Length: 374
Image (cartoon, rainbow, N blue to C red; front, side, top):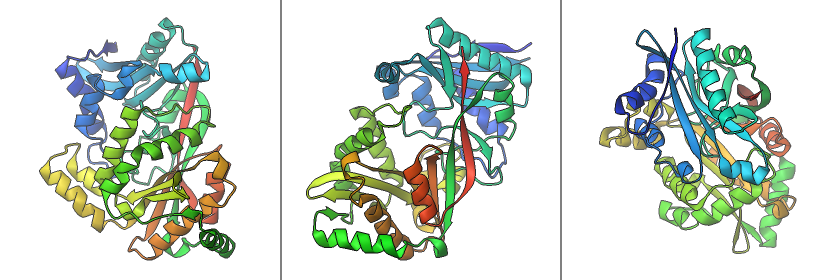
């Protein structure tokens, strides 16, 4: 019989078991990229900014002492208030190919949500809008994209489908080979015309400190631009500050493209080197050795990741997105990167899908969001 246990913030042994499970499930798998254990401990001990406004529960499934699965279920109260809904979300779903364990985990999560009067459960979604989401349903031969778009076993989608979950939407990861990463001549001409008019500019940043000074302005653009998406919850200042610090750890300032209109920040495009190989070698631990390896991988990797592009609505039809991709194209062509990955492109985001195709991209990984009524 499968035993389900909810983990309290001070239960060190249970927290370690929750964190260790995917390391056991994916041991030796070259496609899996581990998260940092310290970040997982921060979440399980309720020290993440999410817990300033909302609640979550963490469940482990065991049988005869062996850990078989885990799941996080939470209510984002800010999101439910802003969107006027009664939704629970789940995350950190990992499970052996064991139907009984999967059922026990799902029912524990659904019962937690139902007791709070919530009407549906959907996910996987992270506690923050910047966390990667979805269950991988295609492209299993590919390595995960750092810790953003996770790898999971092919049977995960079946486990959820057999327990009453259905598709909500897909998120695509596209790859663009360097020799195909070109800007169409028409868009290039439009970009150059806008530059000559003098209002738009995309300055080249040379220090992380300069980027940190405008982090709040970038956060404002992010929040306003993504409010059109029904599942988006605006980032709080503490989240923006934390994400800025995390981004600075892996970023190269010249790859972050910030769009100005006169002196106002009106758009951005985040690109950074793929550090997946170094994260695999770190095995979830951030220490001086792994940090040096991450910094070295910054210069060694041949892959550039694009994750996040936005322009304030009132500037979207003025050619701003073309300027951002124009600058990115120039950067790629002047660099040693052999390919570019564009991640987290929702199947409902027509502008990003069009931009991906314009740049010569092809979808090679798919992650799916699921929903179940309660």
